[in-house]
Structure formats: C-alpha cells, structure tokens
Amino acid sequence: MPKINENFLKLEKNYLFINIAKKVNAYKEANPDADIIRMGIGDVTLPIPSVVIEAMKKGADEMGVKETFKGYEDSGAGYDFLKEAIAGYYKSFGVDVLPEEIRVSDGAKSDCGNIVDIFGDDNVVLVTDPAYPVYVDSNLMSGRKVIYADSNKENGFAAMPDENVKADIIYLCSPNNPTGSVYTAEQLKQWIDYAKKNDAIIIYDSAYEAFITEDNIPRSIFAVEGARECAIEICSLSKTAGFTGMRCGYTVIPNELKFKASDGTDVYISQIWGRRQGSKFNGVSYPVQCAAAAVFTEKGLEQIKENIAYYQENAKIIANALDEMGIFYTGGKNSPYIWFKCPDNMGSWEFFDKLLSEANVVGTPGAGFGRNGEGYFRLTAFGDRDRTIEAMQRFKKMMNT
Ligand code: PLP
Image (cartoon, rainbow, N blue to C red; front, side):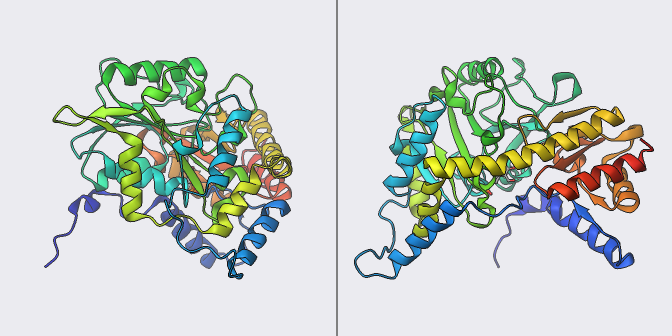
C-alpha cells in the first residue's frame, strides 16, 4: 500500500479560489439573474499584443518545416534568444544579469513551488503574512517549519525582518500579492543584510514588477547591493504580458550564489536547481518561447505597456472609490491589487458575502492569504473598464456613499 505524504493532510482542504468559486456558484444558482462582476481571481483579461502572437505563429510554422523543426531543447533552460532578451530587459532598468543565470520555465507558480526540492526539509521558512499561498503550501507539503513575518497596517503591509527570529529561507514578493505594497531599496537592503547575517536565502517573487510606476521602487532585488550573494528571483510573463494561458516564467540565480553542504563543501544554487530541472522538467514549448522573446522587443514592450496602463487606470478607479468612502487601503499605485480594510470591522468572509449578495461583486477575502489578512479584502484591476466602474458604483451605493 502506498504511504501517503500526510503533510498534504495539514493543508487547507481546498485552494482559496476553489472555495470562492463554490460560493459564487451557489449564489448564482439561487439567483440566476444576478449580474455578477468578478474582481476576485488575479487573471488578466486583455488579449495578448499582436506582435507577440505573430511571433508565436511564426514559431509554430517553423515546427512544421523539416529544416526549422525543433524537438527537445538541449538544456531545457530556455533558448539563448529568449534568455538574452530577458537579460536585455533587466538591463533596461539598470540591472545586470547574465543570460546563463536565467532559467526559463512554464511560470512563476511552478518555480515558486518546485524550488523547495533543492532545500532540506529541516529548514525554517519565513513567509510574510499575508502571502500568495504557494509559498506556504509547497513548504508544508514537504513538512518544513513555516514561520511568519507580520505585514499589517502599522508597517504598510510590508513586513520587515526581526533580528530575534532565525530563518533559513525567506520568501518576499514585491509588488505584493495580495496587498499591493512594495519594498523600497532601503527596505530590501534590510532584508538582504538580515539574510546575509543569518546565512539565509531570499526567494524574491517579482511577478508584478511591470506594474511599478515609481522610479525609486526596485524592479528587481538585484538592483540592491548584496542581493547576488543571498537571493534568487522568480518572475513571470503572466501579468507583464498576459501569459496566464500561455505559460512562461523565469528564475534568475546568480552564478556566485552558494551555500555549504553539511560536509563543508560549497554548493552552487544554480547548479542544483539546474540538476533538479534537468531531471523533472523538459522545457517550455518553442512557439511560446518565441512569443516570450517578442515581449521584450521594442514593439512588444510598447504594446504590453498599453495593456498595463489600462489595468493601472482600473486600479486608480478602485482606489478613488475607496478614497471617497474613506476606507484604508494599500496597493493600486505600483500594483494591480488593491487591499482594503473591510468596512465596519467586518470579517473578510462576512464582507465577501455582503459584497456578493448586495452588490453582486466578487472579491477575495484577505483571510485566505493568512492570519493578518483577516478583516481585509482584495480587489483586482484586471477587469474590464466599464465593469470596474460599475462595480465601484455598486460598492459605493451599498455603503450609502
Ligand atoms: N507569483 C505571484 C505573486 C502571483 O500572484 C502569481 C499569480 O497570480 C504567480 C506568481 C504565478 O505566476 P504564473 O502564472 O507565472 O505561474
């Protein structure tokens, strides 16, 4: 009989968004005429820019011609043309990474979840709370101890290190999902100093870097001194370029990043991550890599900027409505997420039910992202403009504003 990995039994029974979908479906069944506006799940809605689609079609055409057909990619780490394009993108915001330090994958969620394979189960993992669920779930699945750094109203939902706490692996996400908060270079430096002092590694999720509008906010942890000695960065084209249904992301591991094995030998993180991926992952499809490379061309960047600007305007509409209602929030400025305090001290799920039943608007209860999310709520700016305006009108009406 197979022995089950009983760590799975310690997880929440359902992934957050499945619970939300169940509630929405039940409401819809009871109220079939309700015109529901969905501002919960963080999926994009605008089509992928034409220059990207053209590149994918060209890549697909090449697969049908003997001379240009591609089978398995040798390394599975991504074609040079894509890794060079990504390195060029980093350079555009002043960060030097080498193409060989980049590994392409089918998305940031996979990399965030899979990277835990290269670390021992006896590590202490520090996650800022609230957080994107995969950081906690993937470590609990392997039986690791997870501790939390509180993100709360007092620190602007940007948790900072506590010198009295010892951790080996630290997950940071900026711009943050779910809170929309960002770390300044000074704040990141504090985390880097903490990591170096504790001989810890930072896993930095920059999936929303393209939404940063303020010049003083780093687009990459590698923009901050010392990061190359203690951090890896995981990024995605999902929100940058609408790739949620295409699947492409990348992880950057500096060549020099190393830790000691128990016998005292140096272990290079890029080497063992490469070994892990080599055994368990056969690379991203060629047409998708062609599409991804097109994102980083001049035309591609121009076109994705228009989509991002559309979402940023939605974020402003949501933020303005919250200002009008006098509700405290974070995010919206450098992020497609707006994270706000539930009115009248309501609990997250209580407010979820109220907003669904009285305004027919779906959001995400903050409690689903961790302890500090209780009493908070997340709305996303990834929706349609008119529907975003309509949702905010309904919200204001519900609040008598
Ligand atoms: N990281 C964060 C913080 C996210 O919010 C998401 C998706 O919502 C991801 C990673 C997943 O990205 P991908 O679609 O590349 O798997």
